[in-house]
Length: 189
Image (tube, rainbow, N blue to C red):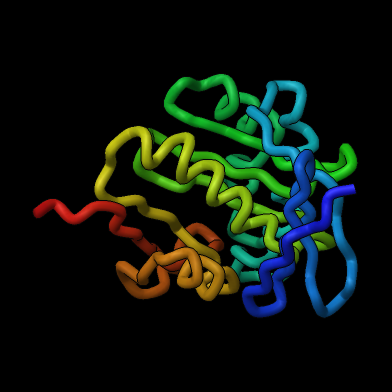
């Protein structure tokens, strides 16, 4: 058996083996085998919608979601299926032991449209894993200089760790709250 290489950054522990990446938290001692990132399929839409709606309370102004009907409609399985099949969107899933752990989606090659992680997989490096994948597969290859994202107020610290900065103050509209953020990839000089 190959001896693992362990790199520690804060509480994140990655163990790299010849055929696997293990992602886990040093605090909880759990190590998840083989996070698999792959292109989303239309058949994933229901499961993706359920994951996103399960964390939607981080966006909504009202704990019960009042006023955010338009937001909820945009996260329905039908809407997700439309994003997955639209060539302007690049949608990926991350599964651990077959279970959906997170999703990431780029829109038009310049906007991080979705980056959601299921609650049981949060703080285990899944968002960073998904971000690295979409950054390399979509953003770096497209040659864009800047990427935008509308972050939940809850996720602003996560995006800051990924290099994003706040582009504006918190916006509250249509029953949701978000913070516009941006990341400069390449200087235009």
